[in-house]
Length: 523
Image (cartoon, rainbow, N blue to C red):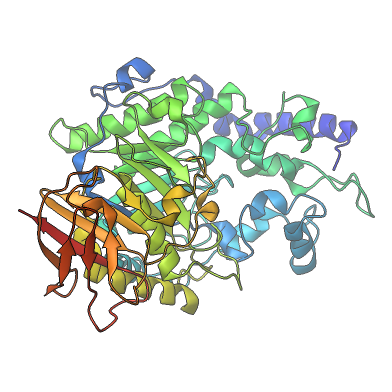
């Protein structure tokens, strides 16, 4: 899709005029500076290098996430607010058929249909806590520029002003902390300025070719952004990355002020950004603000965790590394996190979800490598999980009830595992979870707690099975085994330990279709 230069010039003039009419309030932020709450941390890499990940996060292992907002109202998958303005995309075609042409009916008109009519945060947090989550994430703001709290700097486009007309972040927070869960928020705002540039474009062909989409209307610059002063190729999707973070300084200042407002109002224990730390001193300011606010709430000791997806950011202190839909190939010396989803990030009707076994395979593999897993269960417009989602949740719940002793509070062993899957190398970066084979009874993952070794067999063996790493003369030198117990039952299993392996006779009755955990004690 190409963009008409005359349309760009016209749009720039209009959006420039918007600044004079209503934008003085929107962009008066440019002179505010980076004002941090008092504390140990400054918005510099040198200051943040002193940060260390708190022990509670290394113990927690499993969190759940409601990646939920106005784009969920359409129930047509990820990145709807961007791709509904991309002629020829499936979401453009769906929008055209369902709502009308985006020059007439745009995302601004979809936002009020986000009702959350059946959303019950207390019920859902109960559900997630029973599922085994030790922390919970609310969506704070996605790339669509819509704040899910009573936003000081986005007064028209937030969940209190329109849509549900509720402080979604605040209500999630109360429900989570009431049940003892750590509370986190995710921000995807830093990418919004260029991600949403498609709303300023127009069709390249057809009866409405060249007619601007509603993003070009200066009356809605507070949602779609004031793009005045940006180069012409900013509005060429063939040249611009959706996640490129191309933005003027006035936008970087607004980004900082909005995330500071989110942190100051809700004092989260965790803050996730969709990418690396953005905009240098502005993004570093959001990290410092999180940590300083946490210090004030915890008698001078920072207990918060910030997540970046960039190795450079977290190489020395600063943050915890997050891998979107990705798993490391080996044990990390410091805690890290995978964020993943049972389906699309935003709800999509009719999609096939990950099974409980797929989720648990991922969790056990991640924990064996010193990681945590953050799992999104996408909510529909109503805010109530569908039947298939509830099935996956119930399978995870049942497995965690029996096996979580070998998950929470554990640390990696000398090796993370053994079996065929350990021979598969997938790069250790993001978006590699689909390259991992389904784990079987021959795939073992290890965790430890004190002198106890936990071994998870990710399938049910038909006869006795062996763990080579627990042989008396294995390279790991584990020592003499005294007892092997089946987690969740207390049942002691028969075993034989030779120089080469530990051979275990499983119980006659199968206890799980997913896999099971063994508690191994040594002399």
